[in-house]
Image 1 (cartoon, one colour):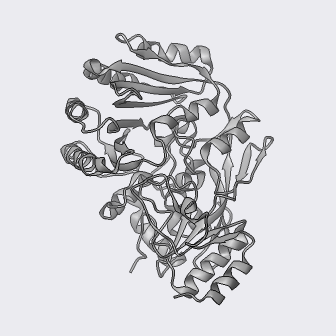
Image 2 (cartoon, helix red, strand yellow):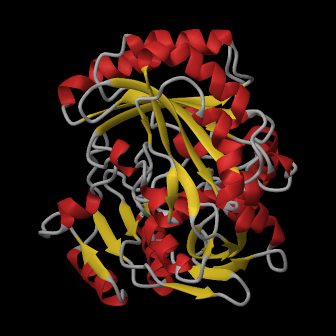
Image 3 (tube, rainbow, N blue to C red):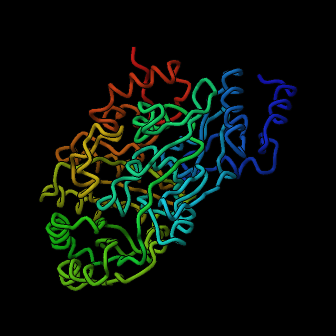
Amino acid sequence: MISEVATGEFQASLRGQLLTPTDSEYDAARKVFNAMIDKRPKLIARCAGAADVIRCVQFAREHGLPLSVRGGGHSVAGNGVSDGGLMVDFSRMKGIRVDPVRRTAMAQPGLILGEFDRETQAFGLATTLGIVSLTGISGLTLGGGLGWLMSKHGLACDNLLSADVVTAEGKLITASPAENEDLFWGVRGAGANFGVVTSLEYRLHPVNEVLAGLLLYDMSQAKDVFRSYGEFSRSAPDELGTGFGMLSTPDGNPVAGAVVVYSGPAREGEKVLKPLRSFGTPLADLIQPMSYVKAQSMLDASYPPGLYHYWKSGFLRELNEGVMETMISFVRSKPTPGCQVFLEHLHGAARRIPATETAFGNRDTEYNFMILTMSPDPADIEKNTRWAREFWAAMQPFVAGRVYVNYLGADEADRIREAYGPNYDRLAALKKKYDPTNFFRLNPNIRPAA
């Protein structure tokens, strides 16, 4: 129990707002992207700056409260909120300063991708940040950060230049190549385990208009489209980010198709994409020149917040006939329209960086595979979850025993070593140094080395 006096003193020590379950804004503040997560923290601190975060860490330790950190709230596992704990809420910390000369951006952790992109694109600059604009920059980056630009510029964590971190001791330190270099290595792929990041500095790159969009086919052509995509993606240049999916359109029609973002010159992009666009008879070819901000949001409608989400994912050894047959079979038998499958293609710079250079070490496979279920109706949860698990079991002959940490579900604690791959033991030793009591445990958790 925490006394009213202690709560009052804590509130007075914050520059931001403190919410309790009796406040009118509490229910909205505790909600996250996945409606499957319905937890009630004891307190929610809407932090206004690093000093508030320091005080939150101190208060949580003093009173034995689990500490969760909500950036964009987009984690499917719902790591940003816990029952009976203290939530650090970054929704009020959305500052960003772009330096167009140095091509860097200093950003606060409450920003979502779309907000970050709008600021950097004012100067014709961008960095790798995900594929859905509603995602928070901090959680995405600290878990690695796949995105449309990764084949040209590396993952989001590869473009992180420094981070300010509040440690378990309640101290604010900087992690960079020049300061606390070991921590800087760890936050680039496993960052939530070592502290609360209050500021992120990114390297930016020239990115203006891109050639992007979706190419959709009727499911009757799924096998041929899959084969065509596989052949095409294996020779994709660094400037091209691609994905492949089988899903239902908003009107319920099942489709298969590719999504592309080409960040080089448009004329070259037209030549690169011609083999893909010349295949078969698509239902729709939506590929066109567009702003990078628009390209970053073109999948937003497919992954809306507030639905009941259940996912399974892993990296594939290769694309082959067995993968194709299994995927198509399960998509054709899906129980609800919100069940789908999606592949993300890793190539170029994302794979050329050595596995041990950052904490994100799963760089030796070419495709990330996702089984996604989502529905506005809680009555669909059981059948969607059963379908996803059966689908996942059928994919075991093809997966590589690796998983992207940002896609781990709340029921997948047994896959932590898969998430950190060859770097797990080094990370466990680093955890012992910076968080020996595992204070920061509401995350894809690495236990301190014995």
